[in-house]
Image 1 (spheres, rainbow, N blue to C red):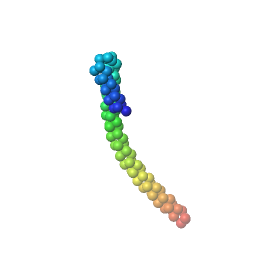
Image 2 (cartoon, helix red, strand yellow):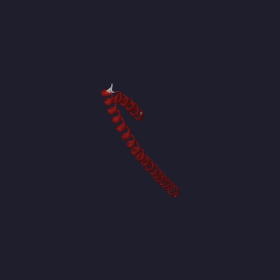
Image 3 (tube, one colour):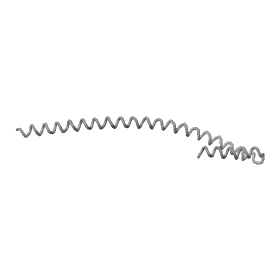
Image 4 (cartoon, helix red, strand yellow):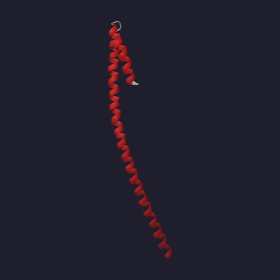
Length: 93
């Protein structure tokens, strides 16, 4: 959207500047084009940087989830072994 705005306002502003009739309006449109272009470039840079960080975050999240599942599995298994051991020892008395 912002890229399209740059192209359209740049074209119209250049046309107004070339015609000489709308010199002030042409300067305003060219200023708007410059600002929109800078915003567009900044948006692309920020988007790329954030998407790279999001990919790293997703990888860390997957590893952490796998580790948590492993710990949970080991803890549950050990708890059941302890419960079974206690049940066997108390029934013998």
